[in-house]
Image: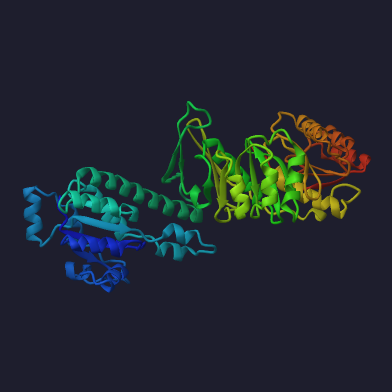
Length: 507
């Protein structure tokens, strides 16, 4: 199907002048609108304004310009259908063989802080999706392009097909176009539903980002959808696995809690150790000292550029992934000697709010992400003895970590480091025992530490065990029917305790 006439109207003008120049070289008549027409004309490309083509002016501040029978008739009429061709001729409708459209940046608009509802509504494209759908429906004769990355494919087809395109390409691009308009409508409905809370349906449309070698296990297929790579860039190492991506996600969410120079080590999405220090090597030592066995094959994340001293320390153990805002040149050269070690650079701050989605039998569970500000601990003391300044600092540090540990979660912490972590046990007491055992195995004293619990202590025994292990303060949500007994046990042991009023289950 030779392309004789193309309609070009794009919000993202990446590569459009170069593409249109090549179309013009094939003798394609180019129709355009608004800013796109101005850009093409400024580049010296012969361009016909749509209003001149239709004989109707743009009206309502440009809201109505391509919604016209000469546009949609030129896209939709069936070539080779005698009745359609006679009607097209009678109404002065000329064929449009190529549509190049990308849509108003609705998703970019609603991603801005403090965007208003009128601002978002103004970025709802009407003419663009209408043309895309008309062209896609008639892909037997019309080629539709919604992504600048596909310009090359169209030009390659035209070179091979004497100015035309193949049905195979038109069909592929039509499918992509329908997926584009579907995702666009989904973004609009989801945003408006958050504003109005009237819709009883949940929709999710994400582009395929990469196909993975396998899932959690080799017999499982897996893919990654979305824009993960806009947050993390792989600098070195073999391709990421499904489990790597889960761990990187967990590591990124944990590190987002910390502003001071911090290093964290994770394994199977659980923190093994976290340490903060202006000297990154010291931060590493604090994190690694928490557990020197579990980090083998783990994930390391740092919120400052990796130095050579830190890289040398990390190289002493086997790691799967290292994540940081950057790597000093000497550090990167050293780490890249490990062929399979993946080096990941964080490209931008991770969102601190959003929606968590998990599949269940027959559907999806959707919830707000567990993001919350640190409560004012001094105002939430429930024991006779208030915590000291150092205990408050340790509570704040440990509370940031415990919310990222699988439930039941117990973390013993100091002001700048974890000392013992117990994760994922059916009993909170067992998690506490594991945390204490881990500290003993690492040769770390829990004397003067703070014990942090992601949910309330249901009985005094957990608090008593923590005090006997050396903890002098505790932070927990509270809310047990036996809170008074737990508070009494804390008072008996001289333990300062704070209730946050907010739990952090992580199933």
